[in-house]
Image (cartoon, rainbow, N blue to C red; front, top):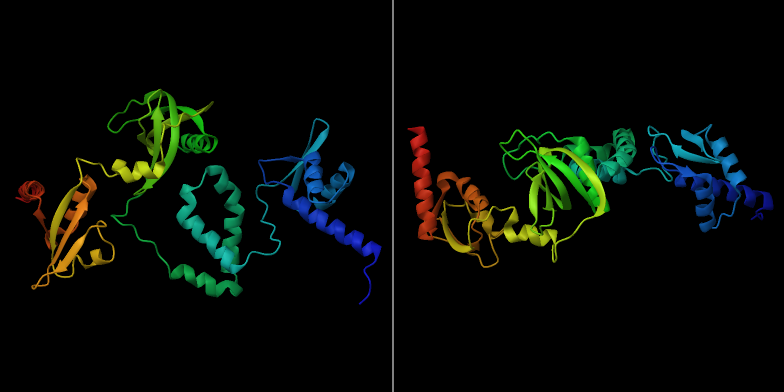
Length: 341
């Protein structure tokens, strides 16, 4: 094998340096100065001068959609917002499928600046999957569906400017001030200080969990009811012991109406069989009666959600106990019958 010449080594090193330079340049609207590029290349063991990098970028600008401007005495660079993703190596069909599914099912959960930066990757993924060589993976999109657990509803329109501010405040742990319309009120209420703590996505509605002013008790704001929001560059105050998962598990989104209790339900034959695989609670007891009906006993939270779930089975379930809960359903069904009379 022939020995690599000094010239070839120099050319190879220059090529690798230029590749790393392109990777360091951000996409619009963000910029990076030549000085910052030199510092980062030096950290990657590519010692180089400002003049060399500026010359490299000028030459590559004739081949790639790069943009630059003179800021004071320094040049700064960025990729054009419309530039395609530079794949080194190219995006595989498997990766493209992952990006496509992320766009379909995770898009609304991502902060706005993240989705905008990922847009070129989403576009590239669609192109890869549409290519003939990706037909096998593209076919996967016709074979997978995610179904809602309840009646499918259209998401409410959200004030995008307010939403962007709220997402940004969550990322930066900053307070916000906002105008918010409560349900049934046409006049928005002004909140001088809101401490954003987390977002919860539930049945096409996004909820901001936050504390207000000097109070520590978290409350919920529906994102689509924000009329406006402005970030206050002050750190939020997190209530002592607050944890978003614990907040949810405590029943804050289940609309609790009292203490937990043991329920007994009697399902029509095979109707409650799914509870063998997805039980109501850890202490659930399930048995099949001689006539095929299924008896279920479990400790459950006293919530509106429980009531909606039971009503969803119609006449294929009977509330056996506790007596007070059975009486509640008896009265409810009589009122429902009255509506149809």
